[in-house]
Structures are given as C-alpha cells and as structure tokens.
Amino acid sequence: MSRSYQIRTLGCQMNVHDSERLAGGLEEAGYVPAGDEAADVVVFNTCAVRENADNKLYGQLGHLRPAKDAKPGMQIAVGGCLAQKDRGEIVKRAPWVDVVFGTHNIGSLPTLLERARHNAEAEVEILESLETFPSTLPARRDSAHSGWVSISVGCNNTCTFCIVPALRGKERDRRPGDILAEVEALVGEGVLEVTLLGQNVNSYGVEFGDRQAFGKLLRACGGVEGLERVRFTSPHPASFTEDVIDAMAETPNACHQLHMPLQSGSDKVLKDMRRSYRSERFLSIVDKVRAAMPDAALTTDIIVGFPGETEKDFEQTLEVVRRARFSSAFTFQYSKRPGTPAAEMDGQLPKPVVQERYERLVRLQNEISWEENKKLLGRTVELLVATGEGRKDAATDRMSGRARDGRLVHFVPVGAAVDTAVRPGDVVETAITYAAPHHLVADGDLTTHRRTRAGDNAEAGLRPRTDGVGLGLPSFGAPAPLPVAGGCA
Image (tube, rainbow, N blue to C red; front, side, top):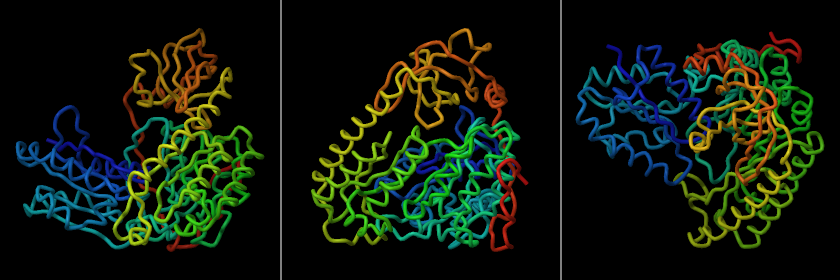
C-alpha cells in the first residue's frame, strides 16, 4: 500500500513553491497525498526569517509526537531555511524527527526517508551550495489556475537584518528558455496566471551578463498564448530599471501590480540596513510606475524598530508611506536573528517602543488602504476566481477572486451572465459596491462569466503536475537569446 504524505509550509512564497517540488518528488517516488487520515510522512518546510519561526516549528513538532508514538512507521521530516540553519540541533531538540534536509537538497527527501527507515535512525543531510536547480524536479501544483515559476534562487545582497543569503546561497539564474518552457508547460495544463519568483527578480540576468534580461523576460511572457496574467515578486529598488516599467506597461498580460520592499523611509536606517537605495530613489520609482500605469497598485514591506531607529527616523518612514500611498503593506516588528550583523548592533529598541510605532504605522496604512480602495467603488473589475481566499464566503454566500491589480474582491456568483455555475479558475467581471481597508465587495450581478479549462480542472479536483525543466544553471552554457513578444521558442 502506498504511503501517504502531508506537507506543512511555514514562510514565504519561495517555501510555498519549494513545497510543490517536495510534493512532486514524493509522488514520483510513490507517495500519495494524505486524506482525512493521519499521514505516514509529515514534512515541515520551514522559515528562519522571523524570531518566532523556531517556536512555531518546535511547538508543532511537540504536538505531533503523540501521533507518531501511536502510529508505528510514521516519519517526520524537517526541511527549509530553519533546517539549513539549525542542522543537527533539530534532532537534539526533537529526537523523534526522522529526516532533516536543507534548502539545497529538497530533491533528496524520498531517499533520506527510505534511508532513515532502513537504518532506523535519523538522517541529517545539509548541502552547503546548490547542486541541482529546483526546476529540474517535478512539481505537484497547489492551484489549478495560478502557478509559481522560479527564475532564480539565492541572494547576493548583504542586508544586515536578513539571514536568507546565508541559508539559500548566492543568486543563481535560470536559463531564459527553461523559464519560458515551464511557463508554457503550466499554460498547457490550463493555468491562466504565473508569478515569476526570485529573491530579487529584477537582478535576474546579472549572472550571465544581461542587465535588461528581466524586462525581456516579461515581454517574452507576453507572447505565450493562453497566458492571461503575469506577476512577479519581489524586486529590489536598487536594481529597478525603467525598461522593466516599460515592459510592465506595454505587455498586455503583465499585471499592473508592484510589490517593492521599502523596509524603512529613513536614509540613515536604510544605510544601517545596507539597503543600497535611499527614500527619494524609492519614491522616484513609485512616481515613474504611476506615470506609466496610473491604475497600478503598489504594495511593500516595512520593518519597524530596527536597531538605532529614532523617532525622527520613524517619522520619515511614515512620510514615505503617506507619499507612496501603498494599496497595502506587510509590516513587521524588527526581529533579532542570530548570525546577522543587526543582531549585534547597538541601539536595540525596547519592545514597548517598537510596539507603539508599529501600531501607528498600521493605523496610517489602514487609513490609506481604505481611501485607495474607496476610489474603486462603482468600477467594474475582472476577477480570477480563487479558492480559500475568503474566510467568510460560506456564511455570506459569496466567492472570492483577485483583480488584475492583485486586490482581493468578495463577490456574489449570481446574475444572467452566469453560465451554469462559477468555479475557482473561472474569470468574471463585476462592479465594486463596498470598500474596506483589506478587501473589496461586489454584491451586484456579474457582468460577465467565462468558464475556463482551469475551472474545469478545479471542478474535477485536478491540479497541474509539471516535470522538471532543463539544466537550470547557466554555467552549463551560454543562454539562448530571449524571443521577442509575439512568439515564444
């Protein structure tokens, strides 16, 4: 009988996509997704960015121990950034864990599980650098309509608050042709939307000597027939070039949405963070994006309470937020991470000071988000219907979807335009009737409803499964030139 698996993902979009690769590798090895029954194998794909990441993992491992004790043969595996950082410490703190693997060897999981069963002892394997690009691994996709496509892994920046470069290594870029082949494979499976993924997506191409490669890649995605939406995350302000703005504005399926981390509005704090841009540079990009795409929605990341941040520094952050008018922001209280330069800096701020500033920032951003969302009242938007985005959908008889600018809209799936029934993966149009800071509501009849192959697959419970694509690492040879929009090789 096939062994069942469950993957619990903690952390960023990189981890979510890595979990799809982990699922693909396990299924290729004969495992099956667990249903309602307890899984034979539970995999934790961990994050190490926030201070509570350790507590979250070890807390979940503790809760799982009785289930493992009650089920002979059950295995627990821990991978991802925290595994790369803590290594053998995980087995010391949680000796009931069977496998620990790092960010550079996610393809080893089935072998490590088998070895741990055979040897009846924990297997810990942490590679120091990437040997095989994750794109060479099969993937079981989570969504029938949207897909992640990794264009690079690792990071060449040295931000003093961030532990990611130490855990994921130097940036490695995929071949452009491999990326487009994966995009086409997803579209061939019915996917309508892809998100190009990288630690710093707009530095893509530096490794093989083309600083405008990312803009070219966006334009090339415009030539993929059947691909309706292209997004990307996350760009670094220091690497942002006008050719990328032009590509966003001129490529029909490129969404007018930009998530660009600010981190702080204080030039002093940015310098201490080793963020190689300043606030005016950031705001100049915002202005250029809005000039090229007036309807663009901008989102960001902000850290409050970085060591040495003064009240004046914090006020400068608030001023940038007022000027940029983000549609939303992911706000974080500074979290000391051992092994980062910031953890050893003088001026670590007391928790009450950080909390008070954090609450002020959240209040301001909520006010701006609400004001920006109110501007959409009465406007007709196109939505790609999603699954699990609306926690109250069942109670309100609504469904939820994402507009092209990334905003979340809850809508009622009714009206003469509805063709049989609206499914996740279908595309609808509707008018906004209510605005809140973090979502929009459309309670009128749908204007249009288009049934899609993604909707067919979602209704049938099918998810795309893509095989590994290409060698991935450009060091194996010079990359082929990118095709121009309108044709994809």
